Each structure stands twice: as C-alpha cells, then as structure tokens.
Image 1 (cartoon, helix red, strand yellow):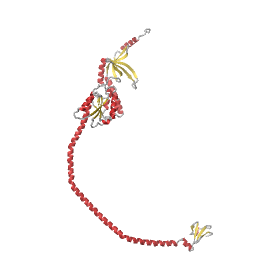
Image 2 (cartoon, helix red, strand yellow; image 1 turned 180 degrees about the vertical axis):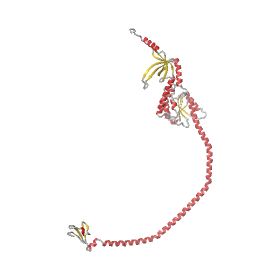
Image 3 (cartoon, helix red, strand yellow; image 1 turned 45 degrees about the vertical axis):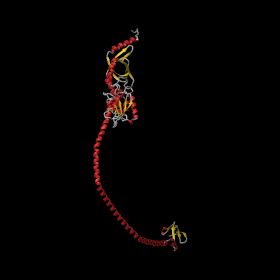
Length: 434
C-alpha cells in the first residue's frame, strides 16, 4: 500500500466511504445562510457559515444544497411560518445529511428546516432595534404626535402598481359619507433589498413639503409576506419614529408586527383598513361638529331670549335710573355752587380786611424805621466816643508788648522792650524795674 500511490479519485472515494460510514445519520445544524441561489431546475445552492460572536470573522463554512422537490416544500413552509423570504443573512436551524462527492467535494444536503429558530432570531433582532430606539429616547415620538382634526391631505408611500394602493384610493374616493380626501403618491419599492432606502427617500421628499400634508400612510398590500424583512431595520424605524407627521402603516399582514408597525403612530392590517381609519377619523370630527351644531341650534335661541329679557329689564330700569342720576347730579351741582359762593364770600372778606390793614401796616413800618434810625445814630456816637484816636488825643497812650496791648504791669519783667503809642507818634522803651 505504501509502495502504490492513490489516485485523487481513489482518495476522494475513500473519503466519501469514510464519511458515509462515520456520519450516516441526519443532523440538526445551526448556521447562517450565505450566497443563496436557485438554478433553472429549481435546486437551491447555498453556503452555510458560522461567524465569530464578537465580530464578522468566519469560523466555519460549508456548501449546501436543497433539491428542487424538497426546496419547494421547505421554502413555502418557512416563509409561511416566519413571514420572511429564504434569503442570505438569515440564521437557520436545518436538518442535513453529510455528503462527499469525488468531483464536487464536501457538502450538506438539507432535508428539513425549523422555522421557529429563525423566527426567534428575527424576534431577537426586533427587540434589539426597539431597545436601541428606546435608549435613544425616540421609540414613541411618532405615537405622541397629535392626529390632526381633519386628515384629508394624505402623503402615501407605496408602489404605484400595488393592488393595495388602488384599494386604498378607491376606498377614500367612494366613501359613503362623501368626504373629500387629497392623497398623493410618493413612490417607493415595497419589497426586496431596497425597501429601507426607498421608503427613507420618500419620507425625505414628504418632509421637504411637510406643511402640505396632515398624515403619512405607508401601504404595501398585495406583496408576499416573505418580503417583510425590509420593514424590520433600525434606520427605517429611526426615520419614521422621528418624522414630524403621524405615520399610519397598513402593509398587509396580520400575524406579526414589524418594527415599523411598532413605532408608527397607528398600525392597521391592510391598505383598505388604513383608508377606513382615516374615513372614521374624519367621521368622528364630523359627528363632533354636528353635535356642536345641534347645541348651537338649541342654545342660541335660548340665549337670545335670555338676553332679550335682560335687555328689556334694562330698558324698563333706564328711566328711573336716569331720573335718579339727574337728581344726584343736580344735588351735587347745587352743593358745589353753595360751596363756591361761601368760599368767594370768605375770600372777599379776607381781601377787604387786608386792604384796610395796609395803611396801618405802612404807618407802623415808618415809625419802626424812625426808631431804628435814631438807635443807630446813638450807637454810632458811642462807638465814635470810644475810638482809640480820640482817647489818644485826650492825652492817653497805649503800651504794647510784642504787638499786644499791656493792661497789667505784672505781666512785664525787667528787660522787656515795649512800644508806647501817643496821639502823635510812638517810641520804644525798656523795662528797668517794676
């Protein structure tokens, strides 16, 4: 055996027999779908991968195949149970057999699938998105918006060819109440990988003219339930949650709520239900207006009659009130006139007395001036007689020590020089003894 080398075919055959012998059973395997392709024969070729939990590094990879007769059954079952298309990126739990082909190598043949595993992963992803929105404080922003009283100007996000869009418009147009609505389509792709980007772009176009709209309606009716994954993305949910207008969703499924449904202002099942919701809202407004109208019709006559009676009462009271007011004003005028007359008489007496008093005051003033003049003359004489010049002329003299008059000889001491002033001239002398 050592001397005879194996051909590649022989080696691969040995590997196949070994694998068949060692792994003869069917095995449930958890993996992520990658590169899902269906060929013209209906066979589904795919790749299973396992990534690092903390990143995107590949830990394992294997080719897989689902034969056409099995794939038709499994895909229908999977999409019906999960509402999700069988596409790349999903985490699945599949039952496989392990195969090895001499030409094509190692592969896994899928014989069954458990959709509850994928559904659980989808629910987990939805919860993660909702938790992130809640942590950012935007989860309920759109729900907190107040729905306008009249929701007639409607911005519709849908596909122009969607049957649900036609049903929505027909329902609004032919409503039994005759209400007028003004829907306008903002086209978007409602299935496939471009759902998220397309709807966000439509929202941006609506936001540019948001004053022209009362509400936004996102409808999808007519599409497959397997195309709902585009409505379970963070970016779309964040845009809708923070949108300044209330958003109503009716994307045509009943069993599950997508993330978009959970953050929108109002969620209904179908496009027709969305139209009914708007019609009923306007109907409620109309009923309130009718109730107000009935109240007005009932209350206005009563209020008019009540005001008429009050006015009549005022009219009957006016003559008496006017007469009383005239009497009060006449009395007030008479009282004012009497006070004015008394005041003028008193002022006249005061002025007469003042005029009589003036001559007496003038005479008294003249006498006082004469007395004061005479007193001043006497004072001037006394001042003049006490003048130092006159005293000096009479033979008196002034003795000064250091410029001060000496009146007490005891203040002098021998050797002091003093100055003596006479009526005519002055001289200095020295104290010899006292």
